[in-house]
Image (cartoon, rainbow, N blue to C red; front, top):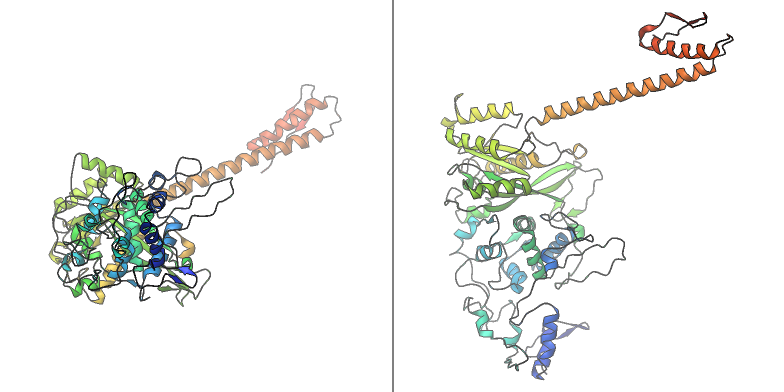
Amino acid sequence: KNNPTTDAVIREGKFTVAGFLAIFDVFISQNRLEVPWRILRTFGYDDDLNLEIPDSVTWPLSSDGVSFDHPSWSLSLSSRKFLTTIFHQFDSDKDGVLSTEDILAIFSVMPEPSLPPWHPLRAKEVFRGCFSLPMLDPLDVSSRSTSPSPPSTNDSSPGPGPVDPLSASEITICSGTSLPSVDISKRSSNTDSSSGRLPAVGTLPQPLVFLDWMGYWHMINAISPSRTRAELFRLGHVEAKSVSGRKKKSKKKAALAPAADYSSVMIPSKEIRALVLGSRGCGKTALLNALRFSMDDAVVDVNPLDTQRTTKPGSCCVHVRTKKKDTSPKKATIGDIESNSDGKEEFVTHLILTEVPQSGGRRAEQVKAELEDNCDLVVLTFDCGSQSSLLHAQDLEESMLTDDMPRVYVATKADDNDTLVGDSSPVAIARRHCANSDLEPPLLTSAAASMLGGTDAASVRQRDNVLEHLALCALEDDPDNGIARLRSTPHAEQKRREAARRKRIMWLGGFVCVSVAVALGVGALLGSRKDDKSTGSAKSERSLSVGWFKGLFGGGGNTGSTSDGATVASTSFE
C-alpha cells in the first residue's frame, strides 16, 4: 500500500526497481530517515547526494603499493568486460546499436547534465587541466536543430526515462537538525523543462555501434586514466585487484548487475595513440574530420573542410579492421565480426588521434613530454603546396623526436595535382627525405570530396587504407599472424642488420674461444697420459704440450729438444 506507482514491486520472487524504491518510501513515510541516509553514506554519497570517488579508484595501487597491475592508459580486461556487458544490456532493440535513448539511460546516474563524458557539454569540466579534450564530432554540430526531442518524463506524458523516486513518491523530506535536507527543486535547475533531464542548450548524444562505443572509452582513457576510472565507478564498475600470495576474495559486484556474461563476444583489439603535428593551416583538423567521416555524416550534409582554428589539443577516435592469420579457425561470432572462410581473422585497431596546434614555449615542452610518455606514433603533416609547411614538419622531427620514435609523413591537400609535380615540389622533397631516412613515402591525402571526404566506395577504401597504413606503422611485427610493421623508424632495417652482424660476430668469437679451450684441454689430457720412457719424462710431457700448442697456431713440423738432449717431435694439426 506504500507503493506510489502501479508497477509490480516483486517479480519471480525478486524486487523490481520500483519495489526497491518502495522500500525506502516505507522508511520515509515512517519518519525513519536515518536508515536511507545510513545506506547512502555507506555507498559513498554525501549530504547533497553526490557520489564521492575514493582515492583507491582514481589512483589504484598494486599489491606492492607502487603501481597498478596494468598500463594506466589502457583499459583493463575487467573494464572491457564491463563496458561490453553494459552495451548489450542497454541495447533495447538488440540491433547492435545504442540509440540516443539507450545512451541516456546508461548515463542517467551521472551528475547533471547526464551525458557521456566525451560529450561537449561535459568534456570541458570532466577533463579540465588535461593535455587534450575530446574533439567535437562534426555530426553533433549539424544535428543541433535536427535531433529529436528526448522522451518526456513528467506526469502528463510518461515516458521510458527514469523518474526521480523522491518526486514520484510525493513525499517531502523534512529532516531534523541531525539529518541533512535535500531541495529537489534545485536539482533540475539546469535541465530542459520539457524533459527534466537534458540541458536546455546542447545536443543529444548520437547513436553508437559497439566499436564506436569502445573507441570513445579508449580515447578518454588515453586523455586521463584516473578520470575515466571515476566515470566507470559512477556507472557501477569496481576494478578487481589481485593480491599476490593471498587467497583471492570474492569480487564486489557492480551496481549495474550484468544480465548475462558477454565476455565470449568481446572483440580482440589493439590501441594506438598518435599525435598529429604540423604547421598552422596545413589541414590537420580537416584530415581528422575526413578520417572520422561516415555515411551518417553525409545524410546531414557534413563537410570535413568546414573547420575552425584549433587553440587546444583535441583527441578523436577511429578504428580499422585488420586481417591476420587464424591459427585455429573458428566459426563463432565475435560481436559483429566473424572469422573469414579464407582462414584469416579480423581484429580491430583503435587509433586515438590527438591534434596538436602549432605552438611554442611552455606548450612545446608539454608536447615533448607527451611524445615521450603517451605516444605510439607521430603523424607529421604538411601542405603539398607549401615549402614552409614541410620545413616546419622536418624541424619538429629533428627537435622533438628521438631516433627510436615511430613517425609517418602525411601530405594534405593533395587533390591539387599542380602541387605534386616537379623535383622541387614539397612532395618530391619529402619523398627524398623519407628515402634517405629509410621511412615509408609520405601519404597523399585530401579532405575534399574527391578523396577522403567523399561518400562513394572509392573514398571509403581510401579512408580505410590510410587508417590501416597508420596502424601498421605502429603495430609490432608479428610474422606468425601475417602482420608486418611498415618502415616508421629511421634506418630501422640498417640497425637490425648491424645488430644481427654484431650478434653473429659475438657468436663466432665465443665459438672460437670455446674451441680453443677444448683443444687445449684435450692436448693437456693426451700429454699427461703419454708414456715417455726417457729419464726426463716430466720435462718431455711439458715439451709435448707446448709443442702441440705451437702446432695449433702454425708452428707444426719443428722439433724441440729437451735440456738433457732428448728430442721430441711436436704435433701439428692442419
